[in-house]
Length: 120
Length: 114
Image (cartoon, rainbow over all chains, first blue to last red; front, side):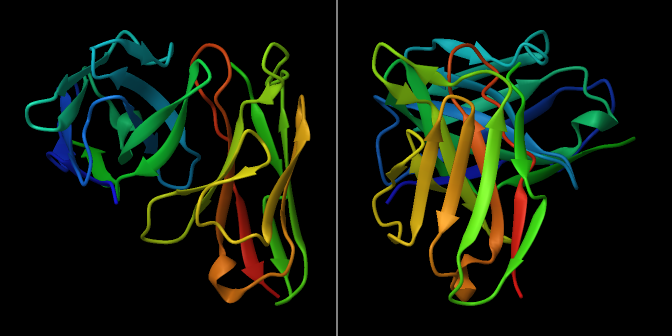
């Protein structure tokens, strides 16, 4: 059974960079897509982006200028960086696995989620 | 962006009764070359991550009870729970994974026991 676990600071100051890592266990990071979704309190789910183990990325256009994703196959980890954060970036951040689905990506496993608060 | 709109926002159903949740997309998520609808349903319980229930609009994920079913095509989709159980209390989300990002979610439907 695949298990995903997010890690990183729970508090980030405005204008700084949010950095999260997702560690994958119970399966290889190869041959799947890996992504991030977030959910502000009381709001819906927002897809942030995904990365393939080759490094190929797709980001949400609304966040693309601030997002960077990377993957470290040797550690079975992938990461999210979101720069110039504001209070609007406060949310529960989920990492997730995507399986290839006829040219697209279907999210099939999610991490437990980690709350990141942007505040001074 | 494709906007996904679910209805209702919340729903209370008696145990053993049918629960129906609707999802409407602002553009078709049907891809004619492979005749697939790029639409998934997820279940989220408090303190747990979302769980994939249905993909391709109507294909149940392995291990999902057969009381869960999905239907629809194009822009209009339905998730049906044929006989509600206590463990089905959750928030349900639809998501489109068609075309270019972002792969948007519905706002969620909260399902409770009446």
